Image (tube, rainbow, N blue to C red; front, side):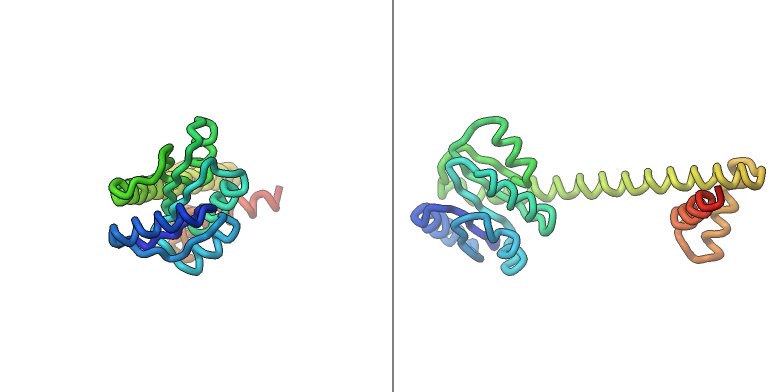
Length: 191
């Protein structure tokens, strides 16, 4: 069972979607007529998936999706009639996990929700890997800068400079990158 937040400006379509979700065994956490309060509702109801249906997603909808995706990312399944590739790209950039150009089919809804959640989870995993790789690269860069400072200031070779940083980090019980950052910051103050 998934907890689903529904966004649709048409009450009739929203009612049909809510009925299809209930028949599929899912729970509707809230129904919004616009994305204006999307972030607040996501924080309040903590849905597993956001279901949006629109003829064409408006600029405001995409902006609110972007804010929600930044603050409290969730899988987003968007049904629209607009098949313009630039609109699809903007929607995906705003945080839409699945963009379907069609009307809602109750028979396919459950499978589409599962695909949306799987795509979202994979994207989040890739984002976490990217962030980790970026963090490690930045740490490596700062350690190399600190080694350069020590090599120049103390006349050490690269290996000795690294061991000096490592020893200092162990003595202070801090991460190597943090100690390296301190060394670089102090060097910039002295120059």
